Image 1 (cartoon, rainbow, N blue to C red):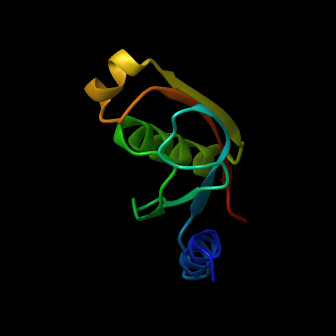
Image 2: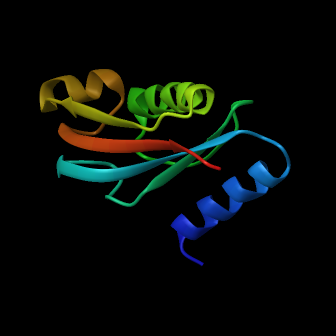
Amino acid sequence: MSGTEDILSIARGWHDAGERVAIATVVETWGSSPRPAGSRLAVTESGRLAGSVSGGCIEGAVADIAKQVMNTGTPQLLDFGITDERAWEVGLACGGKLKVFVEPLS
């Protein structure tokens, strides 16, 4: 199994056990990005995480939005960008841009 399939299997298991779950997927990158397009993060309403879409403050922001998506049922496309100069300040190795699509698992 690939890492993506593992994340989806974990998410499905959490969902089947009664947890609300959202899936975040990197859909586009530009410049430097810690994770490539297709990387996924599963988030439960209770705060469980599996996988990764970036790291640093971006991962926390995506997890927060994932909880909102679970509550509203409305998917969101998130756009993050940071310069090389600011990257280290927020816990990233270097600058770049990425887009992350967050959707509820149903």
